Image 1 (spheres, rainbow, N blue to C red):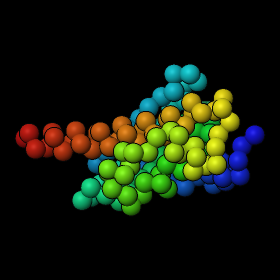
Image 2 (spheres, rainbow, N blue to C red):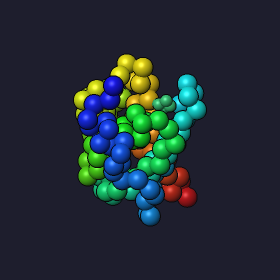
Image 3 (spheres, protein in one colour):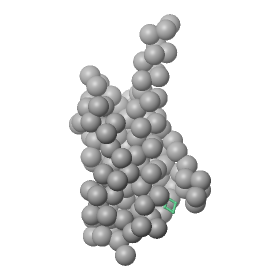
Amino acid sequence: MYSQKVMDHFLHPRNVGQVEHANGVGEVGNPTCGDIMHIEIEVKNEIIQDIRFRTFGCAAAIATSSMVTEMVKGKTLEEAEKITNRTVAEALDGLPPVKMHCSNLAADALHAAIRSYHEGLKDSSEQ
Ligand code: FES
């Protein structure tokens, strides 16, 4: 039911853990199943230097989280903002239709982390 890429990222997830000098954090829950994804990024000069995740969820949620970190590491924020649940699922050679909602976690958590980075910049410039 899962592609080889999904199984590979599920069994050997990349970039698990926390970023020591994170300046953006995103966390989203999936209301359908209650699973949670937490993502941390370190941005320098508009580039995502480091990204790590912790996901409490199903195989598809873990695989999409892992894939999204690989897709955006070293990329600009602008490029990362273009990532959608569909592009993540495509990079994994597809997800079973009943599992497509799981890929929302990865894209949403990434976008939440980018938002939190921008909000942090706003806060520090207001001081
Ligand atoms: Fe919860 Fe997949 S079943 S994210």
